Image 1 (cartoon, helix red, strand yellow):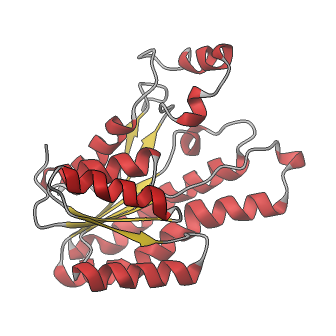
Image 2 (cartoon, rainbow, N blue to C red; image 1 turned 45 degrees about the horizontal axis):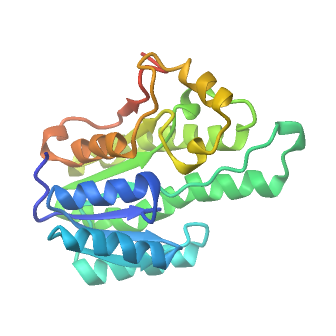
Length: 248
């Protein structure tokens, strides 16, 4: 387990799924965690879960589709904790549809939430990281951002954009000892996947050499590694957590 004692982490989309798992894992490693999302009831549950194990966490209301909320929540986090050492850009949505039927509003919503929000959140906290000459920015992308997916042109484009953003900012911030990396999950066991028909799930599994779905804890472990001193010489990298679905 990485040692993150004394660090402050901000996790967006932390109320459920991968974001929740990242918040729990970062707290377990010793970081104080600012959890941000729209659903305050679920966030309160995450904070309570962390507190029960002796960790430190605080909830912040943030709709990443709203520029002003990103600015206000980021300021509140900095006021509460004094700094942000680790930023995990996890918040995201999917609005799947074949391109010929896709509405402009669904394209715009996915790009705004999955890509633009990451740029805006980084902009709010990276100044502190650069001044203290230590920071970890971790963007949660996806295997479909690397290989595409039918019916997910908007989602695939947003996640591919996150990879480009990761690499550009790794070059931009490297001289200040701020690393920028991405984690690209494959098929992860979530409520959405669990609700798929058995035959569809089996088709997905046939694409994965390890023959199983991943877990949110496995994605969180990759995030914790990239947030730690053990990853201090890694930047501009995409860490695949996909069971071998995409290699190379």
